[in-house]
Image (cartoon, rainbow, N blue to C red):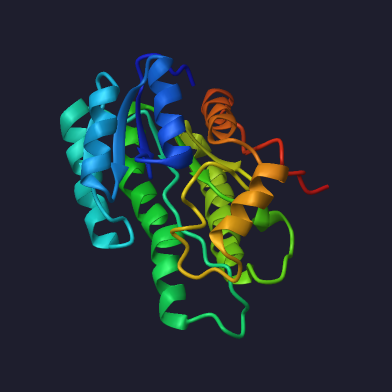
Length: 240
């Protein structure tokens, strides 16, 4: 997909990877629909990015998803791409993970994304095509103690994404995964539902072994341009 002139929704775009992606895509000529929980932060980002449109929404409250898509479509008149980036971490053992918190995590990391896809698919089909990019995690490509609950949401997302890719190919709707590893310079660890190690430890490890938000943003743009099934950040080794 050519980025210039396209309307691209980026969720979780008030900070971190989402903000870096919104800035990069805007720099390359896209019109960005910004979606995140923080209305104040979102408004600041919107003022920075020309032709952007901000919709404050907590996507874990999945019933708001159709209204978000309707507002964006009403503003621009079309939607060329959807980048589902919003998500939260949950780093705790299987034994100790709170079931209610896990349900909330599933709502944000899986159900809201499925719902957003279902809302944009008819729009893209009527337009003649589009791109849906779901941001997963390198943890969906390996088994690691303490992150099974969080990783399980990304395993589910991977299955939904790659199945949808096959189902929607006939409609010229390309569905793909962008798979980051640990990313430094974000608030991802601080906003985790639960964390078995402190945010400082997470950030220290990410700074040593991870990628910057700007690098991941580059990979998001690459994924949109190539319309590939899977695109990996440099810190993630694809499964053989």
